[in-house]
Image 1 (tube, rainbow, N blue to C red):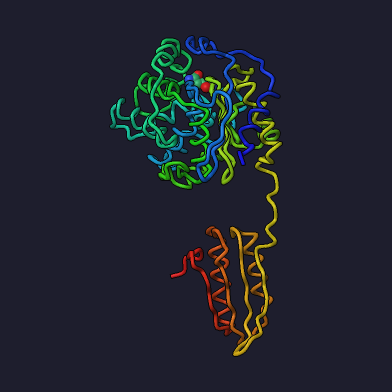
Image 2: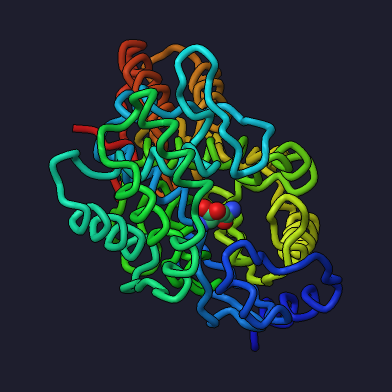
Length: 402
Ligand code: GLN
């Protein structure tokens, strides 16, 4: 069989009408072919699907911001970054001077003022400008699983006209939320925005956040699980600028757009998706990209607030009554999280308190998260206290018992 997924993607693209205009405040961006359109998906196992211009390079622009934020979190720790950049939606356009009235902190790392500040935090202050940029370029490359390079034409074209970003940087520097020279920070940030990616890259980069920080294609751990979770949270509230509320309601996928025409979205544990189409709406988001994400979300049931299917098949309990003994057998399956573990504990509770041996079979369990481990191991401890001889079948060591 030939998988129907690429056909589905191509057909869905056909239904997305274009509109808007390419970004022209960065002169070089006005030269891209506005009719290009591509889409790519990446799964947690690293399988990739694509249609259209998914392998055409374009400048990442603001879609780089979540990844630079991730690098800053790794370098300075969450508290070290939050002392200088908030995580509040601003409700203002991406290039606004949105800072907290009292602390002067930029509202969030997804708008320019916060992203410029974040760039300064990606590496220690005593690194050179070149070292700092290389750290960011190498970091984004690890997210993509290939070496990314800078589009120098786009960089020069933007840096020559970036008066507004310069003024935002001077504003933050005057308040004191970074120590470096503002013009160096804007140059580095602008280079970061000029990094070339494809929709295919963005899907992998997104999935790396959605697996908790491990690149699904290369297997490399790029950032910690805490960092990945934090970045996705900020993307969900601030990723689409002042259209973020509409986006989360209609599409429901944490996402980030860039004025180069890219959008990527991540449904943790399920899919990284990316689109590329250069014409933008008034918010600076790709018109066909938004339309395609709306369709993908509906067709594929990807809304983050959609209720996941209940796994009531998680526990099977039966009694085996054969000589020389009678024993209670409980077999578990699938991933164990809070709701499944609660069912497991209820099944434990129903075992009559007597001397009957209890056999627990975890061989079909695929994973157990931190909560599941605590709940189930505590349940096992209590079964033992009740006097049941226990036999635990856990060949994959999902319970991580000593
Ligand atoms: N480099 C662009 C800027 O700073 C990025 C903006 C964007 O993609 N929204 O204006």
